[in-house]
Length: 207
Image (cartoon, rainbow, N blue to C red; front, side):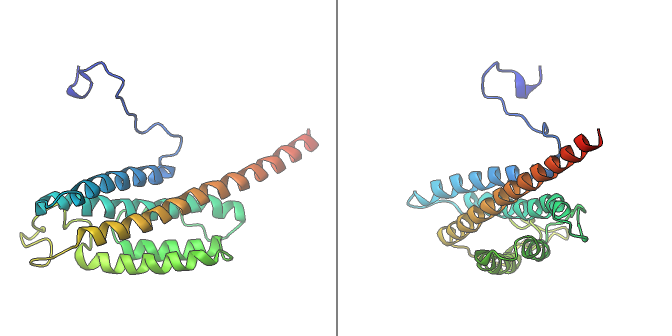
């Protein structure tokens, strides 16, 4: 029996069971966001905490944002096909460039939801956060390792982050990203149902 299943409990969790794993980025994003918030809130409730205890928080928040952006890009490919858009981008983006992913998401969301005025403010926030995040962690490397591939500091010397400001801003934008991700799911389900109804009608006529 492997170490991860030695105890016979009801605390199991499962992964890789959905029909299309490209649709699971939003779920992964939720998990990393939840973990980041739990750790951040625990640290902020103390009188003080060690510097190193906050390092995982930065990575978890950043990874959640990256996953939400990739979720938008991947999920939107299907919705674009239902809406009849000619340019459908379903490529996999195996990079950690937040600015690039925000730019892609911006273009897709404006194409899919041109009348959503609230979306513009969210996109402006995303661009700002992506640009500022790049200054402290350009490739999701800085808060995972103390050095880069050349043996130098992975961040600027004595880089300072205010945990309360950081976590509050990230919680706010990630909650909005979760709403967008859910909205794409709803819109896709509506379009899929209409498509299937039309397909079934045509089939019954032909039969």
